[in-house]
Amino acid sequence: MQSLYYSLILFLLLTLVAGLWRIRRGPTAADRMLAAQLFGTTATAILLLLAEASTAPALHDVALVLALLAAITVTAFTRRVRGLRSADLGLVDATAGKDAPVGEADGEDSARSRKPLGACAGERREGLARDASPDPASDLASGLSSGSANGSANSAAGGGHAG
Amino acid sequence: MARQTARLEAGMLVSLSILLLLAGAVFFLAGTLGLLRFPDVYTRLHALTKADNLGLG
Image 1 (cartoon, each protein chain N blue to C red):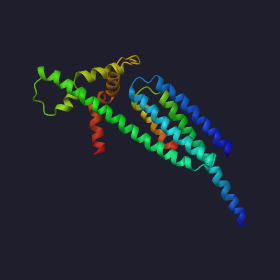
Image 2 (cartoon, rainbow over the protein chains, first blue to last red; image 1 turned 120 degrees about the vertical axis):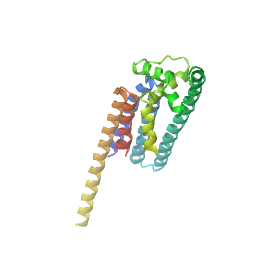
Image 3 (cartoon, helix red, strand yellow; image 1 turned 90 degrees about the horizontal axis):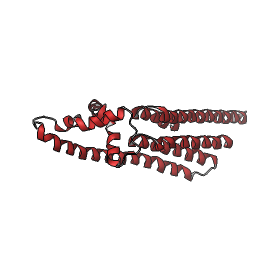
Image 4 (tube, helix red, strand yellow; image 1 turned 30 degrees about the horizontal axis):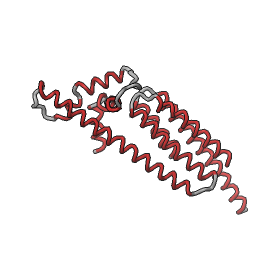
């Protein structure tokens, strides 16, 4: 039983090392965040196995804290992305308000499907790797616009699901 | 007799736990392979939820 535990721990560690490749080259920031989520889950499993293998029950508490921190990490990432996208939308509205009439009813949703974010999503769908992107802000915005590309329908579905 | 049933119960418990541990390891492997090989963010998210819910849970 002990040997099974330790071999499973070794297997999970190898899995984690394989997941590092996605962090090395995930095209967008969301990919790297997904890999970090997988690391959190794997580390929780490793700690639980280690607690059972070496009969150290305090490691259960460490695993619980790690799972809690993984959830908080996702919340922080989502908040950062939403703030960045709203700043981007402000820019889009400032430039588009000069040549477009302001009479549209739902300003935010129509601006979300307007040109700059859609253009970023099109680039992303063509498979441009932006590893060497100079500033992290545009990298994050383009990674995020996967949420706005497929898009407006997707956010509407998400809202209905959350409601 | 009671000792024998207790030993049988312990054996079943051990074998069941080994089975579940191996199933969880298989789901972790599937989730990591999906994270490495799937083409899109949403499909990678799908694979990651498999590793989360079925592997750890």
